[in-house]
Image (cartoon, rainbow, N blue to C red; front, side):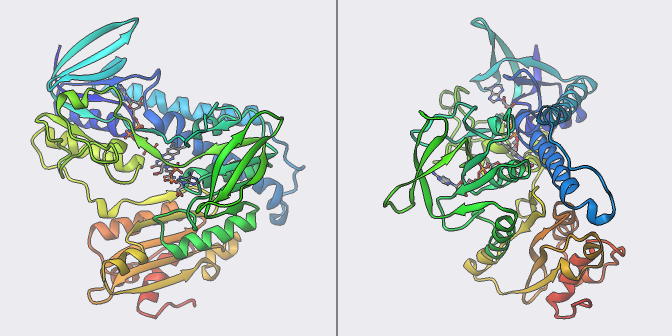
Length: 466
Ligand code: FAD
Ligand code: NAI
């Protein structure tokens, strides 16, 4: 069977790429090594984590806030098994959706591990030593990423877990130790804290969320501490003794020094992810990787080998589902002879805690490092009518605009619905908007989005409600 395109991997990058290729009239197939389609995001990433974040937030609200609103209910009881069923139903629904879309778009799916035997040839290992070779004009590598291991520490997905085990604990740990104050550590740390765990986070650097605007990270850390999460910054885990009933975790200052032993029931290791390029035949095919083992591509997602493209977590850039999707669309359009591009300067980033944290564009630190003069407009949710009435006043909107042109260069938000609010400013940035453009746009009242307009007004020191 000869195809126009074979996509290896069916995560958000791969499945979206295949659908767009089919829409453009290309004969398309996908290869997936796992039992279900959808990749990390749908099976063990975005979707299950958001289901648990949603359910655990409501659990906490029901016990803490309902009475204040005049809703009298008995203290909520946790049924963790049912919460996991709720999560799994969400995963199954999304995974089945991908299956349906493949059929609808007449995309052939091969189940097995794919390997590039040569440009134009993908070999699929279908099990029991059997292989099948598919001929194709173009290949898209969309194999994603996997968990970074902590040197010398094996995860058993039971007591020492990666994010995958951290989404499936059968019991709420009394004490949870999280290694890594990144997105996964803070999202899953929040889930288990809400459900009753005492959570402590050990972070190698002297700050949480490297890469995030400093002011936002500091403010977010204070909010999480108020919620009960403890942080041990500039520290490293050097070993875990699993012999006793409790894990005994050795923690040292990052620069070395005396170790302290912390006890925990479960340790969650969340120190980043690495691109998945093992066993793909890339070296033999001559596809070049960078020093972080990411596939090197040009602006059209072409590798150095004619007819081989790569997208998503396996190439450079933030490891985010929507970035992978947009690259998938662009790669398919390029293969079809169109001009597919992605503006990597306007990729939003959201942390789905409560409050949420969302950002797009440059941080203050990046602007300083690049020597770009900027003005800041800030507006707190404590001065926003809707946030006041909902009693969700934590956080603020911060807009960074070019000092001379007023063009919006970056927006950073902590707040109840930050993940949704970031959409409007991402669109504004795509259109090259100035802060004045946002300030002059009518925003519905009473909405949290008025805080975005006020922050834009604040760039010019003329916020109304502050
Ligand atoms: P993946 O989703 O990793 O898919 C790659 C696919 O390729 C997999 O199905 C894999 O089995 C398959 N594959 C690999 N090698 C082969 C082979 N040789 N042959 C056949 N198949 C192969 N991002 C967000 O934007 N928002 C979130 O809320 C979010 N939450 C997350 C929560 C967690 C706990 C984790 C771990 C990640 C989260 N992410 C989130 C990141 C997001 O999941 C990834 O950025 C996204 O899945 C990357 O998509 P991808 O298509 O590049 O790769
Ligand atoms: P991360 O890169 O976000 O954070 C890892 C953290 O671990 C960093 O703060 C790093 O300094 C720290 N660290 C590294 N080595 C360490 C060590 N030895 N000891 C202590 N700390 C150490 O990685 P994370 O949280 O594992 O997530 C992986 C990726 O998944 C992220 O890059 C993100 O793009 C994606 N993701 C996105 C989500 C979202 O969009 N809401 C949710 C979850 C994951």
